[in-house]
Image (cartoon, rainbow, N blue to C red; front, side):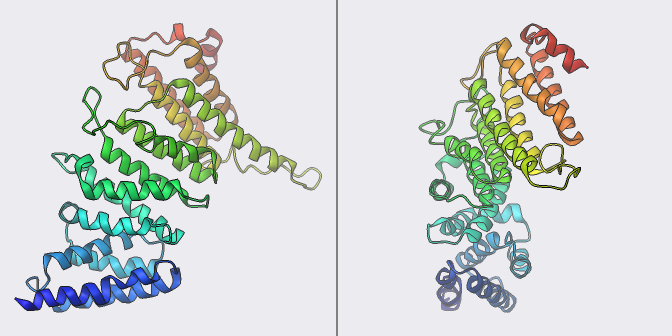
Length: 372
């Protein structure tokens, strides 16, 4: 009886809690964690299931879950086998240990923790959300203390986040957690009490990052905001999404102008770094804002049946979307052109399904350009 409890005490105190001491020093922490994974692997190998208490197994699984997402190859390869040994089925293990995993991940978002640690654990948070979204019947995640505590920890970390390359992972984690907590279907009442708004859900905070930092992180902010908006049905008015896209265009224009002003040899071509370069950060950013705009048009219903529904678009609102997407269509790569064609197809199919006459809501000269 005493042996399993003694093992839990020894492993917890001497091994599992020690990496807290290194959490601000990346190199020291990584070296310790590689050694820790090997030590825990030995514990698993030498002990049968009866000796490993459920509490110890859960603590080891929680540690392993996040570290499998490290950017460091050595760390990943040290922890992945341990996770496989402890948890042959990821979905079953996440369902069983999600409280311990949430608690372990939360610790990475304290102020003193290094940026690289926060980025790694943010990727793990998104992976955790993917698994929790699959559970059926769907639990009321808004009432789950472990998930809401993790949401608060990530929310707080993002609020105090300095701008650095890689913030996108943290924005994605916040968007995924908020979507998990506040997801509802059209026509269903929100299960969250009080119902989320733009501020409490983190939407305003996410969108604030769409005009800060690198283009890659700005695009991540828009995608995270769209995922949350879609889940919680917190669709902004079309004019606000039009402004979001206009801001992204202004930033890309600014960067293009900088390239054009660079000194170069006479006759040397201007390099294509932004618009016109397939999958460049600029085109990914513009794709994200146009996608959010098109998806918002898809929330326009002939008859509103849900508080998240929008009114049918006014002639200027629909025309603004087509003008903006046409402008990018003319200047961008084939990849983005195909993406824009898909967006048009989606928008017109939705309007047709809702029996909202697109032809009467679009300036005639624009029809000619779209069809050309």
